[in-house]
Image 1 (cartoon, one colour):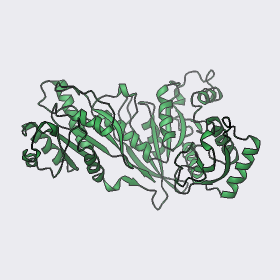
Image 2: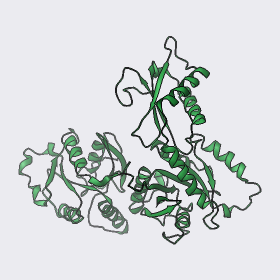
Image 3: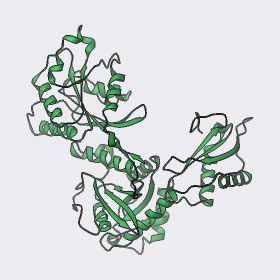
Image 4: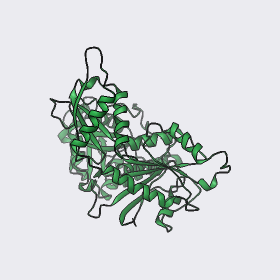
Length: 450
């Protein structure tokens, strides 16, 4: 089961407190806040969380009549925010009567047929909030807020999450469909590989970086397994993301990772050791998804004698030492080299992710691992690991080890346990989670997992 992360866009005219509201909803300072109108010139994006739901929060520039091409670009960002959002927050200022810009924003938002919330901000500056007349904008969901006094923020968060689409939860269907996502930096050959896997021209392929903006999806059948392929937009460093459409393309790529079972991280064989590739791999790992490292464009490598497969494998092993379990495959979408192998490996990883071990198997391994290398403690605090079980409801292979003084287990010993577990059982291609829990604690993951 996976969950699509909704997008919430904050829109309104300039200087009504959108950035202050953005920061209040995040409970941290992300956007520049100033008294001057128009401080925010670009859409600012951050991931927020309320109770058990996460969502993307987008702060946009203030809406006004575009005076030049630059202003027109900013206004285009706002239109894109409304088009891509799942929930729209319109912010108005309590001390200012309804303006033509307010009416224009409301009309634009309501026309999208998305859930819309009206936030009357800065209510601390007026005496009687009930005589403001903002209901004339035609928006039923209305919240009065003061970001300086933290009023109405909790109410607004509850209102937002209640209006998230009900179909955001995505489960594996009756056919047990496998979801694969092609991810990576722009112009590393994702769409070429997508077309090669689909064996037909499905996506637009261009030498210009950033052709793919939406997530292209296609279902295929391979060796009796139904597979859904997702071709995502290239992920750039945050400082290199262009405003408007591209920002939402990156958000959709992030969502594709969250919805996938296994991610294929494409890297140009001619441009290795890029830090962003490592960051993307870390994102996949933190989301608990399967991972295949794919060196694309093998046919374009000029001197294959000085860059043999073994040498490249050693280089990747060092660079991606934090995901040593991820297999490496060299491909060429042009020649078709190892394209089919990608699907074979993905199906194998899917089997590994669904491996269910008995409690007796796990505890035999645990006692052997402890006998070979007992956990060291700190002073008089000697950790003791008693028994372990596998979680049954987690899509990522996850295990709970119960014991005493578990918080004193060193991180290197956790790494030893994971390495030993992988040597005894087949979990290549997928991260695994180990929770160290005090025996007396009843929380599913323990109140203080090590």
